[in-house]
Image (cartoon, rainbow, N blue to C red; front, side, top):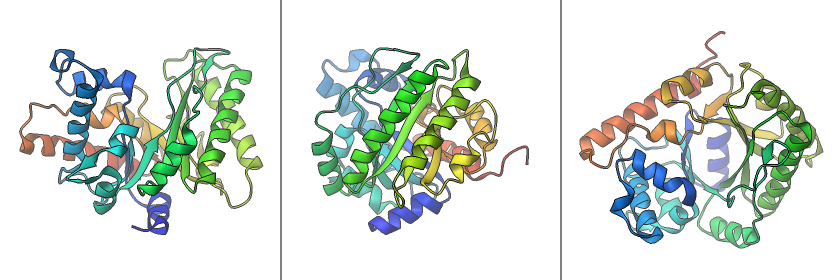
Length: 300
């Protein structure tokens, strides 16, 4: 796929984006969910080797193709690794899946009800390397815990600033200001976030676009103005802690939003499965998430 092919696929393709980007802090939990306990490895190198084996098994599964999975978000070490003897981004491209890379380095402590991203002093070098490997875009996550406008405005401002740095390298940024679905002021967070994103979109130069990865809103359809905005290439949703059936129901209530699930995609996969069991389980999860991503809103 050329860059234009990848742009068209992400903009208009039917399907969803797989999030295979669990990083240092979340890797032990991801491995436990996969059936590998912490006693199976003794250092970070072994831990990351095991998670790479899991991701390689997913990417090489017959179920994992561009027919239903239009993109995949990779952790930096996964991007730098190989699948079937090829650089991971190239292995994805050959399967018709557009590669993205997670670029944030974790979260600051909470202030004003939010957690901003930690500084990324080596971001330019990472973006240069990602571009050379054929990566199409990036993803960066911060978290909103309560309806504090000052805090939410700071999150969105930081997201767009980093997004501009990504755009300057010829990559497509996915901005991910995640609203904590356990927040007691979640609906208010959604509304303030919408307003702040719209303000920042209006300030983007003409011709520039971003993608948005958002928590599914309390009010279905709230993010329609973002779905329809000319400066938004695509709106995708995280599962945010929902189990897959519930996440898919919530997703299907929102027009034009597709999934970018991690835990909800991987929750039934186990290292101990035979290849046949693994492929069948992954195919079932992909089918379920695909249907929710392409469905018309349930209330329509």
